[in-house]
Length: 322
Image (cartoon, rainbow, N blue to C red):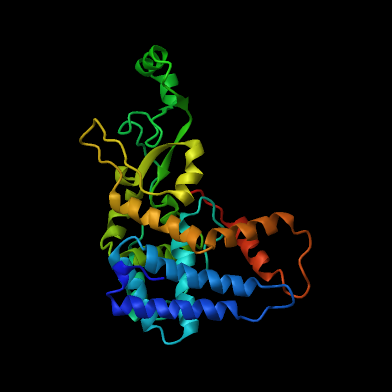
């Protein structure tokens, strides 16, 4: 049910009604064959991604943007395409490991979207690989406060601090990106990565339509590794942060000239994590990953087509976002 805070917008109410129709259509989609409901589940995830973006979008402007896209679509097939675009270019880009860059697709409802995407695509630059937030974070995980093992090993002052207190815990940590570093990775046209460049441009265009105007320019030319977009986290917290993160109070830094994580980036990340789980996208993706591990022989009737497609993506282009 649409919450009261969104009831005053006719556009959002109309879009939500259309999403319910999409869900009903998905549930009634004929089986490919007896017992094969893969197409039904895929359409249901696309519908629910759109629905939960209306309910859990990172900002009110993002909710309005999604609602306008839905009501502007000429038919229900185009609305499913909208869900597919958000699934490919918002939900999937925050997963820790990804397959081949999904095939870029034209946006079905708003011509300005593709025009803006082309402008961004022309300016994309691949980022350098160097980054560090350890100093700002006091050589500690920003969530647990536990100290970084390598820093303690190499820093005599930290060693003394650890030996003086039995309450200090030392763990392996890594640098975690709030918005994935892989978005702008491999965007050079050299080596045939034009599709990756268009894929990245679509992601940034979505962010622009969500109201985060200028975000692309903030992150282009290496700024994806800027301090506002990175956090020091224990290694064991990375998967949790990637898909289950909710807003948590972050500690202040004693280095006032070093900026803390940007609340806008955390907002985008947290909203994606909510939609990822609530829409059923997490279960849907995990199902394919399990089937990829278990399947021995592909079906001759085409029933394994989705699994094969997902497997080929995973084998040909795996990237860690951290």
